[in-house]
Image (tube, rainbow, N blue to C red; front, side, top):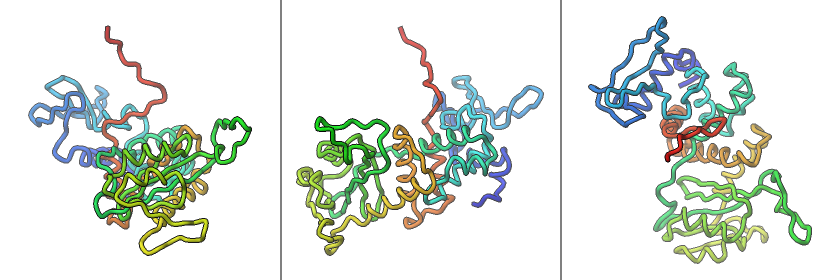
Length: 314
């Protein structure tokens, strides 16, 4: 896949490609879940009747739908070929693609590009079902600080220090995937809660000498540390270099590509960097396969400018 492909130039080609990714076994109704091909009818496009291409009707629930219904693309006025191009650009760029770059490349307004990028980041967000690690596996944990908080609350003594920075905690399974979290404060309780929910107890935990992990490390099969303050970076197989490498890519992308990020949106950027790391070339994932995985992640997710008003049930 490259930017000369027809799916990036033609709306119909983009729609057909999206249908092939979302519906490999034929269309299904997002309203009632019906997938019986005999109960789903393709409605022919008709410019006079204003029937667009790719419209289907479910004969079970009598609702009409297209490939974008029930996804982050629903009700978007941006042409599908530009959606596909944006997904490819944000999947292929190791450090991301800014909204300004999407605005210039796709020929859409900056406001549209900004909202488009955030909807794609929502699609990149993973749904974690299984914990990281396990027997014989190593998980590295570390925290970092990026950018100033939007609102800084000093302590009773008037001190601020690291409290002015946005805290990010990340867990990476060596040779596997990463999970990162934006937390209000990096405390032992926060660390313990995140580790307990995301790492299997049979795991060997590797951290630096931070006291944040001293107590919670006892939960796991083993807890090994390296003392960075004493210039100890590696001791045999004990190190946190994997998670440090992830942080380096994240910070280079945030400083060099995105530059400005409101604290309220930091979790979306973390989901983007997690997605690319978890579908990286070192695991044999190509740019095309990464984009296909992103398309599959669009289902069942919506991000709107305003909350959707749901009817009240009396």
